[in-house]
Image 1 (spheres, rainbow, N blue to C red):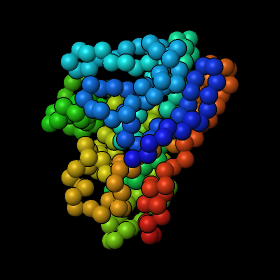
Image 2: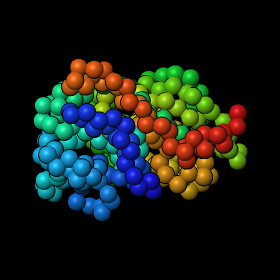
Image 3: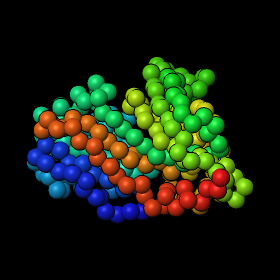
Image 4: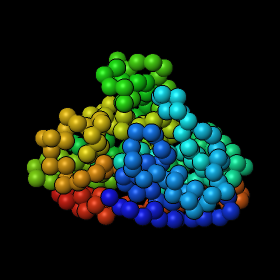
Length: 247
C-alpha cells in the first residue's frame, strides 16, 4: 500500500490530493485504515468541522471535515478537500449542479466490443448483500438515476484471458456507481472483491493485487473563480497491467 498522500494543488480555499489506494476518505467506525480526514485535520486544524457530519448505519456521528466527495478505500486518485465552510458550499454546489467533470481509468474482465457508449441504469440496493448496490433486475429500495459514459482505450489478452482498459466519465455520483454499472453489463472491474468475486478466483487478474480503478481527472470551478483541471497520474501497477495486454 502506498503510504504517502501527494498534494496536487493548494490555495486558501481547497486542497487537492492524490488519495492512495488503501486509505479511507473518512472514518467509518469499522476499520483502522488510515483516513484522509485525520491527515487533513492534522495539517489544517482550522478545517475541523467544515462541511456536514455523516452518520454510520448505527447512528454514530462520523467526522467528515472538509469532505465534499469521496473515493472508496480501494480506489486511488484525485480528491478535493475544502478548508472553509464557504469553499465547501461552493464546491458542493458544483457537484450538485453536475458541473464537475470526473474521469476514471479502469481495467475490466472481458472484451468491451463497443468503442464508446453510455450505461444508463438506475441504481438501488442489492437484495443479496447489504454492502452492495445493484443496477440489475431485483434491486430493492428507491432506484436513483445513474449515468456513466465510457470509452475503450485498449483491449487484449494476457495468458489467454481477455481484458479491456477503459475511460469512465460518471455523469451522476451514486455510491459504487462505476463498479455497479460495469458489473451490470458483465464487465466488472479487475480485482473488485465486492462486485467481481465470481471472476477473481478463476482469473490471472493481470497479476494485480488491488482494485483496477483510479480517479484520474477532476475539473471544476474553484471558489477563487478559476476553472482548474487536476490530474493524478495512473499508478504504476495499473500501467504495468495495461502493458501486459496483447492485441
